[in-house]
Length: 294
Ligand SMILES: O=C(O)CCC(=O)C(=O)O
Ligand SMILES: [Fe+2]
Image (cartoon, rainbow, N blue to C red; front, side, top):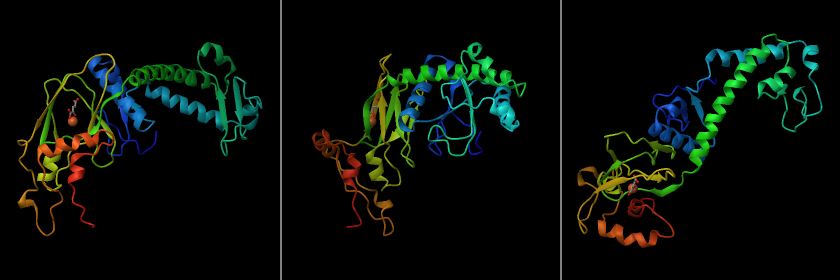
């Protein structure tokens, strides 16, 4: 394993936008499974890759497979050359030169693996532990692939139900019946799945608070993903001022070093902007930003 891989504190490591997914949670009840499927779907859509931990493959099996491969490559030429073939259809093939146009400097041993009983007869008998160690790994990695394929297929049904936006108002409080809510990380613009924790309320910052705080707080960009299997209910309570009351940067937070960054606005004005959003969505707070470079 690469030395830069950190172990997950929770389920999702976002410090480097690098998803590490704890997949034994796929078996911890329906609600948890849904969340993990959503995390996997998110990683697939956003990054096209992710790492899994708690996948159930024993450490000794992973170590054994690496040892078997390494011992094979350390063998003398005559042991390995038995498997050399120019025929890429062979069930086992050792090669040191490029027949695929992509191998530049590597040796490879390529063989079929599952079902093991069909293919193991073609595998090296040297090193003597090769068949057992690589065989155990082949069987266990197939189990992980099957679980992941199932989860990825389930996640493919998920569609964005409510696209990228931030809320007008100071704060929004969400009471949600199930997962599906995603928020954008402030620093690296990656999406993070928010779990629906029973009994908990989700709170996020809206455009008004970004303006009031003169940019010290940022309104949260978020969206929701549809769950094809069950309806999701979410009650979003958005707290703001009355229709025509203006929200402006707090005077206490404006001085020479921190000039006013936003124009004042009312809830009515945010509504007036809605029709123009139909074809080209722009966050309301963006339209309030004062461009200081001009
Ligand atoms: O469906 C949700 O949980 C979020 C709803 C939302 O973002 C909104 O109504 O502004
Ligand atoms: Fe929202």
